[in-house]
Amino acid sequence: MKRMHLHVSVEDLSKSITFYNTLFGTSPTVEKSDYAKWMLNDPLVNFAISQRGAKVGLDHVGIQVENDEELADIKED
Image (cartoon, rainbow, N blue to C red):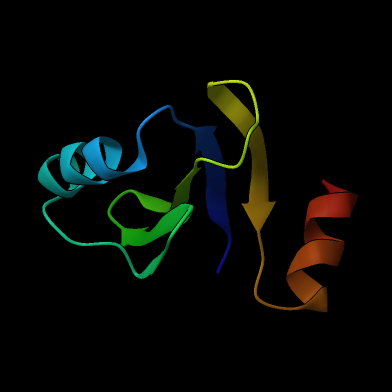
């Protein structure tokens, strides 16, 4: 299963977690002192936020795959 991955650097992790909990209607799948991640099925996305010293805003975008075959499929397209 291919899944979009978005990672955003935030200024205030606690406030941002509250905001995204409300937006997504669920709590993070993973929550650490400087990081939170939601593995959503609708939309199919791995959405992460962190407060790790990076400039606030979009940190990176990617595509998450489950296995080598899915990765090879992406490379061929």
